[in-house]
Image (cartoon, rainbow, N blue to C red; front, side, top):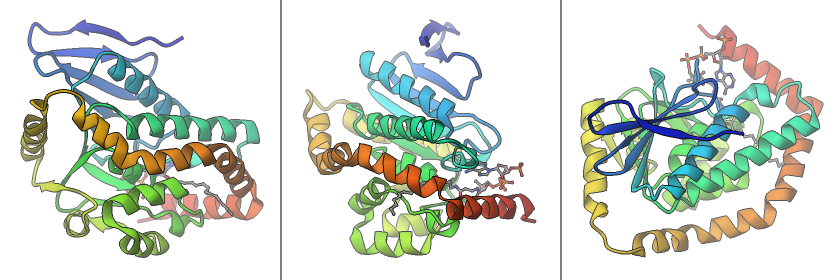
Length: 278
Ligand SMILES: CCCCC/C=C\C/C=C\CC/C=C/CC(=O)SCCNC(=O)CCNC(=O)[C@H](O)C(C)(C)COP(=O)(O)OP(=O)(O)OC[C@H]1O[C@@H](n2cnc3c(N)ncnc32)[C@H](O)[C@@H]1OP(=O)(O)O
């Protein structure tokens, strides 16, 4: 059984929370503000496997319990925010493992998307597919410029982006831009992402990004009561309710689609292309 342990590692303002075995995330909380930074750190590319998703899920539970005032989701891997789902979870797998993986993804996403506290994605690297979903599920996005990319590239792998990925994107950039985006598997550079509203701000370096993160929290932290979280719930509830209604049916469709030999072939080819790129 996993438990988060909290203890002060310095006499200063940060306390650290340590996760169980392999540290695929690093977590630190500012004692003064109770704002927590979660750093993804699963080499080489922060691909989201069951273990990493489970760790994120536990952290989300813990932050809800400890009345967290804000979450910053970012990465400790140079140039990568997250490469999206770990494709090895899809390749040459079995139905039970795939089913467990998909359930973990669904449950973890729901916790992030419905977090009662404010969430910011500090996107300090490439962010394709489910990496993009992680960022879009936060309340605010600040992305380092100029050379990183973000978007739903699933079409290029030959697997459809799930309906809730699409609906989250729609809620941010609108239906038409989402349709164009997902059907072409478009990956956007930082400035392009800003221009279509996929991200909220850009930053030229981490210092500037951190200062923008702090301004975001400063603007909202003094709000009294629960009005912010209640309105966030209202804004997102139509997606959440549809997701809850369809999540079991969706899992079955995903299993059928991924286990299909043609899909397996597409994933294999995609992997080979990734490995052979110059
Ligand atoms: C009929 C009704 C149907 C209904 C069905 C509904 C739904 C369909 C079913 C399922 C939906 C599935 C949704 C999936 C969403 C996803 O997230 S899929 C994952 C998509 N991710 C990507 O395409 C990212 C691919 N990676 C990259 O583009 C680059 O790696 C990078 C992130 C830009 C980093 O580039 P960089 O040059 O720094 O690194 P490398 O490319 O050299 O990679 C290093 C190493 O890592 C391996 N790797 C990269 N990405 C992944 C990954 N996502 N999973 C696993 N492994 C990955 C890469 O192969 C390299 O390995 P090495 O060569 O062995 O070192």
